[in-house]
Image 1 (cartoon, protein in one colour):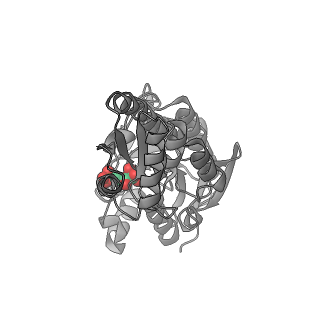
Image 2: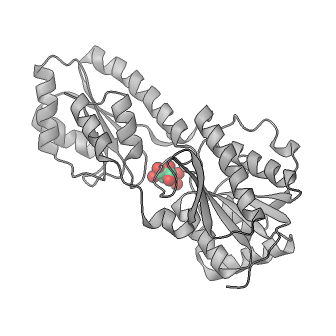
Image 3: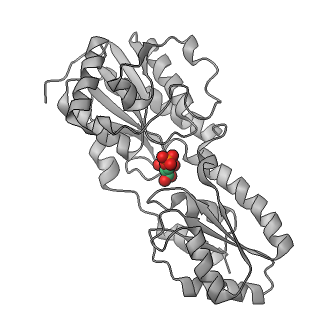
Amino acid sequence: MASKIKKVKRIGVLCSGGDCSGMNPCVRSVVRSALYYKMEPFAIYRGYEGMINDEIKPMTSRDVGGIGNRGGTIIGSARSMAFKTKAGRQKAIKNLKKHGIDGVVVIGGDGSFHGADSLHRESDILTIGVPGTIDNDLSGTDFTIGYDTAINVVLDAIDKIRDTAASHDRIFFIEVMGRHAGYIALETGIAGGAEEVVIPETKTDIKAIATHLEQGRKGGKMSSIVIVAEGDEVGGAYRIAEEVAKLAKLPARVSILGHLQRGGTPTCADRLLASRLGLASVRQLKAGKSGIMVGVVSGKIKTSPLNRSWSGHKKVTKELLDLSRILSI
Ligand code: F6P
């Protein structure tokens, strides 16, 4: 690794991996914070793909005006296979140098941070990660940008599905995203009063789920909702619904929420988190730091090595697991 530059003059910001609501207010914050500290901000479009293909443009304060309340990301996002190769990264570094960019802010999840870590190790460009993913699975921050908006979108869907489930006396299996993490499922399941939550962090017992749902019916429940995290070891909601329905002999329906969970107006919590972390990332670059992620832990801005963000995936707490079980009788 080459020695790092001491004083950053030009900052590139990019969004990478699956988009999420809150990326826009974060981009706005990075651009305006950079300008505040007399640095020149650049947008790197479509993640690492844009870094490799030289889709890099200077940004002004006005370029990020009025974007804080918009879902998605105005600078685009992508999952780049090319950046996983040394040749791809070398091309990207060459482009950054061409523009005089000596500091980069990567807004994304664990895959994006692997890329950021490589950039940090293989060049003298300072690199900071900002956690942006609906999955909320990164260590080093209590929440990731986009998570709060996503769980509110999911909760709204659960409430609506509950209406029709109760009218028809049905069981609904609602599949939510989260990749290998069950945060979205567990927290929306508790908030939405789900009878069961099926997540990858715990062993799924189909028989126990069927018995629990049957007992609920016998006890007078008019509807039952099972939230299924997409990463559960048994399979998706269709598979689990089929197996449970076979045992419980109850009418079941499946609803896959899919990518609607990634859209929508960012909530106040996400806009605030995005704005705080955007400024924090620029301050870290100003201080000459690299190879770290900025996060918020117990209300305070904290930094941690990029590679810790994915190596110690956040665990769901026993408290939440107990809560979900106790309230679903
Ligand atoms: O990591 C964010 C996420 O939305 C996951 O929850 C999901 O598994 C994945 O991205 C979907 O990715 P894609 O948009 O590429 O289908």
